[in-house]
Image (cartoon, each protein chain N blue to C red):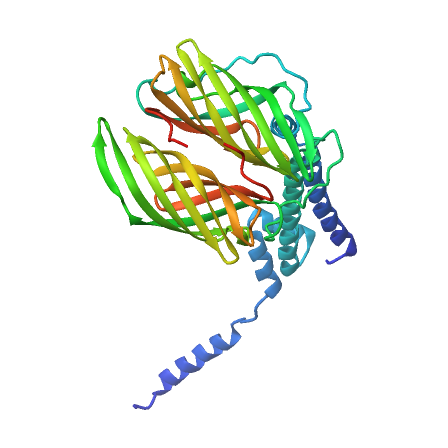
Length: 197
Length: 238
């Protein structure tokens, strides 16, 4: 029998299936990333200064000799930048941040202080600054450059840090990149100097 | 053919008579019932709904579409918090340039892929535990989401290896249909040079005069992926 009642029942089943999908969507947990913090950290520093972070090492290398290293990187604002508008460019100068993350080599674990300058064009920004990384055995210090987009949530920056203390004579090249914080970090540690400018 | 005797004729007549009395009619309804009784459970359910088979297939399709649509809604909503996240707010009014569209104008976030091939391996000397390569030259073919970053490039590189990793630096010139980008690149390599990552700021010429291209290239073997930004301004100062 092809009664209208049975067709109505079938349509109701289809509607219930669609409604169930909608309910699942509205109750799904939101992603736990921190795009707002990322944007604040790199593009427009508006967040309040945060407490000194405690780095969490994720050492998997032997910490000796030349090495390819990987890990993650996050930033939190310590001191906000000054902002100057020149034409269509917002110039950020002198932002100071704590750097945290987990890296695969113990030589690059420790407390990281980063200064950031940037020129923002629309929602992309050219960036440059300095990084100092310190742990019980020594320091890494140098400059970095790069860019961000999507209002600062996505980034790609690279830097050359020169070793001090036990790391004297060594260089750490790093690349931090990704769509949102925590970003992906990778780099190399080698005995030698950074390329000459 | 020999003729039949009377006995054989009678036997033949009897056989025909029996055959003619056999019931050869087919009860189609009974056959259908028997077949339905052997179907899998889901088919029995459809028979309970008494929906014809083509309609049943349509219903399966409709349910599938409903599920796919529901999953799309889930995905969209999961992306929403990022879209709704508060954007950084400059403290003063500023005229915002166009968003990146990949349409080949204005400010853009660019992505792309490419391949490169070695023109000259340069000269390599061993120094301690490493090597020093000078004068490495390669060409590249780049296809990006923005025509301003699509073209052919020439890379000049010097490379110092330290065990399985290396530092590298040099220059890159990317020629496109309407102009060129040129500047210095530097970065690192690992896995005995099979993987590398270099970045740099390239300055535009031709139609790109006054623009800069920040160029981040990751390569594995002879394949490369690039990402960067194009903006109307100079690279950061030294």
